[in-house]
Amino acid sequence: MKTSIFNFNRFGLLFQRYFMERFNTEAIYWSIMVITFALIRNVVPIMSALILIAGAFYAARFFREIHSPSNGVAYFMIPATQFEKLIVSILMTTVYFFTMMIVSYVIGNFLGAFLNNMLANIDLLPFQHSSIQWKLFSNISTPFKESYFLFTIFKLFLLHQSIYLLGSIYFKNNHFFKTFLAINIIQLFLLIVFIIELRLFFGFGGLNININNLSYDFGMTVGKIMRSIIYALTPFFWVVSYFRLTEKQI
Image (tube, rainbow, N blue to C red):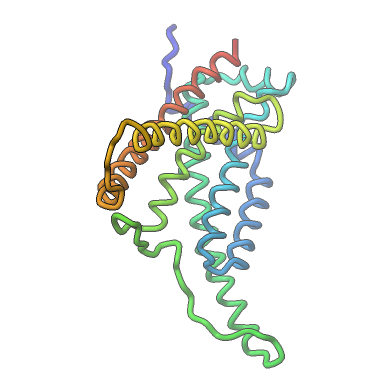
């Protein structure tokens, strides 16, 4: 009998397997996140870094078991297709992780405000009463438009997670650090190419271009290109992850 590439029953069992095996680890992890958000108290740069760095570690370690001779065999013997396993990994490292970070932020924000106001009642301690704030849900102004901070982070978060998820499949060990090194090497190479192209375009050929007059239009164009690249790269890395995972099985 032909096996379909996707089955909701197998799909649900994969989620069940994940939480049954990692329930204690997940509970400890998100408790730590709640405490961390309680201590941060809406410091936007630190919150952004925490979401991205913690997410990268989470995605980079998701497929670590496939690189173990014993655990890898057991993983590939699971009666589910590689497509189902990849979809589960994508949902866990993006939707699940980001949602849990928001939940941790909300609980941690309430906890942090409560503890701060409780300590402010003690005269000997340097704490002041403050109302609870929700900077993660606030509106921010960019050079070209206004957008919600949370939505802006989520778009970058998707690309970030797709890269580190691929790294967890591609590299046999030190998944996070090897992926981080690969990203920086590629970024350095692209930066060098970009600088060379700018020098060739603006520095040679006798072109007399007023950069100040073109700055806004040029920035708008670059912004649109970068957004298009981000939107295209995320599914691209997911597709590459699928083929890499399939090759790993072989």
